Image: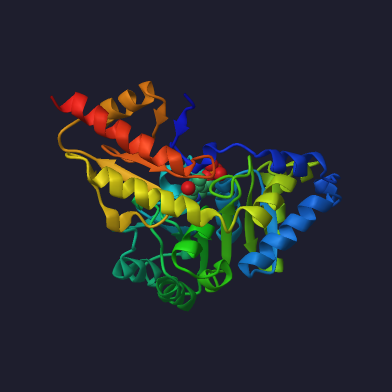
Length: 343
Ligand SMILES: *Cc1c(COP(=O)(O)O)cnc(C)c1O
């Protein structure tokens, strides 16, 4: 039986068609400005998100790191959510390498940020906050979305204080799809946006940082400093380009599968799923009755892999290698595992 890998949307593998695009790609030395595929990708990525320019980088973590290092100097503060990826999963690169303090604003269960706390941080008497970071979708809060109106409200506060706004949009295409809008409108009030090709878009590697021409020129120097300048990176940019051209529309399928999986899991006694938080391609489950790690191990024995990124919680993520037929298999297996564990 094939393994059903729901640990993350990062586990999907490049399709044959994507591998063909990689094989046929034109390449050059991108550090010398010679790689046509990288240039094309950067131009397309910038256009699709409504920014002037883009910079191709190896990972979302590096995109965020370069954003923070370019927006902030040593001793400056960047405001991030208490459940943000930047705070929990990026090795605290910005503080370690850039002397940047992370000021923390509480994320509610649905991912929303406390506006009073944001105001407090941007009161010019109190801090040298130079950057407001938002995350959309909000990974550790269930893959929840931040609507444009809220981005506008928060961006107004930051901009009034003379600070900039960065969106960690690792899954911004999932957010736009769920909000029934386009990415460019959704992020129009942000100065910079990063997003990943290696998540729901299904490429093997790569992310971009986008913003004004002037900002991206400076970010290019920062990328050099952190070792992210690459040579014939058209090889991987070709996969990212293929993803942008072919895998954006199909993201809705992952959301439909996630919703059906969540509703099925919600029917199982002693499994808790907050269906209001299932807005994109993630489902978080918990249980008062059992140790979720034991459930995780039991599922793994039966070829179903799930992750645990938040304590006492399992995370299941749909993606382009999870076919519709897998959903019932997973629901059925979780039900059987629970029956065994609860006796
Ligand atoms: C995955 C992710 C990133 C970047 O991760 P990489 O593994 O470095 O590409 C950044 N932010 C969020 C919210 C993510 O989910």
